[in-house]
Image 1 (cartoon, one colour):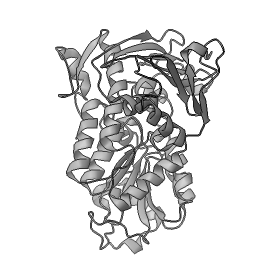
Image 2: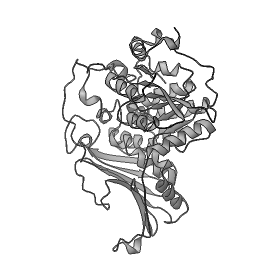
Image 3: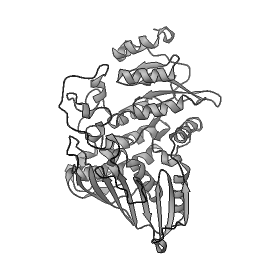
Image 4: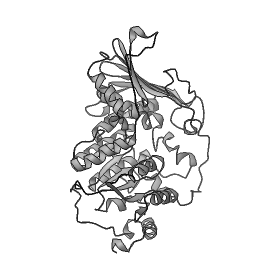
Length: 434
């Protein structure tokens, strides 16, 4: 069948039947060619939920980008994305149709985290450049596999840690690297959120055989184990369950951990995490309250998570990082940063302040520019992987209930067989594999 014979409605119906039911158009451009300076980049979306739609709303305003296809396992989300793009955009519930289309230069992956690895790895092997949301993968082994897939297939991969392209974050990191606050001995990272519904209780729900209309639940599960549907393990709260994510420790704190590895390097010697579901006592598997202590080469880092009390002692900052130098402090979050002298701590008079924002627009523009230039983007695959390791290790320590020691060279946990099993998924459900 020829591409021009398909309407969007026909494409959706045929795609739902399976990969074999569709012949995908191919253009003359090979997978290794680069879009010309005056040629539009052709993109496809894999995952059209909250963050995916936020990206899509911005991208459709970019004159040099064409969104040719959208993919989501939820028909309502798929329809909303197709309507937003308009025109002859293709819509499918199976991302493999997108990978088969040689006219598509790159994909943006904004699925649940348990799909990041396979979607991004397979896209690299299909000759697509990839913007993948954080964390880069569901687990550490997947992250390394994606780094290798990007390298072997010469793909541009950008990870969605947008601090790397935001002005005030860049300036702060440059000041730290220049030694303006002196040798750093302590770093504190935190989230103190309970004001949003998604960060309060998720409640309780029983498994059921009733799947929401229009949802391909088997495809949603993908590489994760087969199980009955549960609304808490689905849109919005899935990342509180180990099969699909790692809670705040790996799903959001990655933004902050990434800044630490950017400024200080990725080396970690050990980590110990304690905590629990102390407040909400709901069905989540990840903690609502936790403290993780990391041993760096010449500094100690702590991460504190509070979902049950949103009081903000750090200058009313609900999230942020504090870098403690020999006699100065640098305090930063998405609204800006400030530097202080230790001797002025009673006055809280800053040496320097800078306000800021952390837009995802600039991060995507960096990715698209690198698709043309073939240069490494700001948050390339290796950087995203090394930063994702931090939260994954904290979760592993929490799950095994003890301090673990990390060998960064081999990316293994030292002398701990039980902990090493959690570096990857025990089994991938067919046909999904790395």
